[in-house]
Length: 181
Image 1 (cartoon, one colour):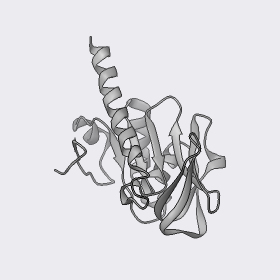
Image 2 (cartoon, rainbow, N blue to C red; image 1 turned 180 degrees about the horizontal axis):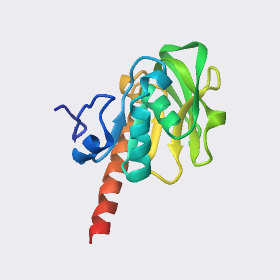
Image 3 (spheres, helix red, strand yellow; image 1 turned 60 degrees about the horizontal axis):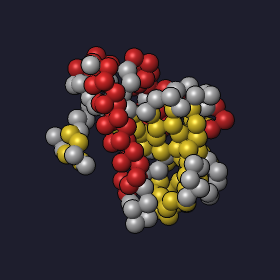
Image 4 (cartoon, rainbow, N blue to C red; image 1 turned 30 degrees about the horizontal axis):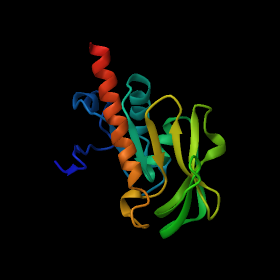
């Protein structure tokens, strides 16, 4: 299995059940990028993801298609974009810090930020067209971004996003240990 930033990564198919995923005893769930309509692509996994969100405190991090599928599992909606976002040098603003990050994108659907439930906050927005580029759940270690932080379009603009996910995993592990004691 590949090791990234000290993490062991187990890749599972979209049709993997909640029970099978939990049997791996994951420290976190990473929702990867991929092609397609998020409603059609997520047909099998959205119900499983909803179960993970409802029944566990696992940190979850999604990128691109994973971002869209997470938004759908949380009760949001996605919309087909007229032209989509493709390529590098897409300016995205982190709404918490105000920082503008240069990102890579490759998608034809976007999360409809107006459809997000109250417990979900928009975190990033495209400076090209104002479309949603990030969300987080208020009371859980769950977040996602529309762009590709792994692509490093800006020198290292978005590496902090992976570090945030790892921080969530470490914090969750400490919380679980405290509950045991």
